Image 1 (cartoon, helix red, strand yellow):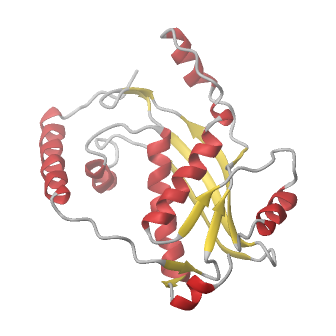
Image 2 (cartoon, helix red, strand yellow; image 1 turned 90 degrees about the vertical axis):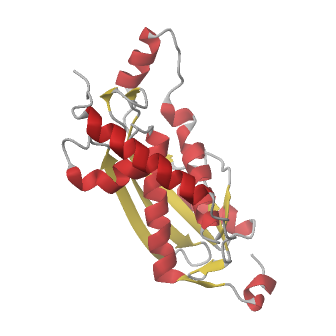
Length: 225
């Protein structure tokens, strides 16, 4: 049994409100992000997220039934999440870069290698659950569900500057009215696991910037990475 829309009128009205809101927001000129120094970090490296989540065999089987063959999520989602996290940081003015690493190296060796490349800080992510939605934007048999943890580390000292986590399974509005704001922001759609992750990234980046962000000075720009 899937998650049918139980109150069609409510969904239609919310969709219209969301569409009108998006149209108004699109007319506003976007302002460039103010350059931010995050804690002691001038530039942040974001390597592929470590993958400890169980393989989503349910999703893979549902795709095979449709005649599609999808690779294991762990083979490509780790680097994709790192790229999306770097984008979320850049949107807040943080100089961040998604980087590749040697998977055969230990975590300590990876951090050391990034320090050698000139990165003062690194964000390390660990994916503990990553279940892709089974269905479409408007109807699902199973919603997306994601859980991950992250730390921001100083590569020179190994000191953890910040840590945070995200854990969410999308729910229908009819089951949890507290998700109304997110429901509207997602335009009354069932989102993918990657979209759900971006919700987490934006919230965690906001937290990081609030705790350790400051406008970047000219002196910051003259420092080495």
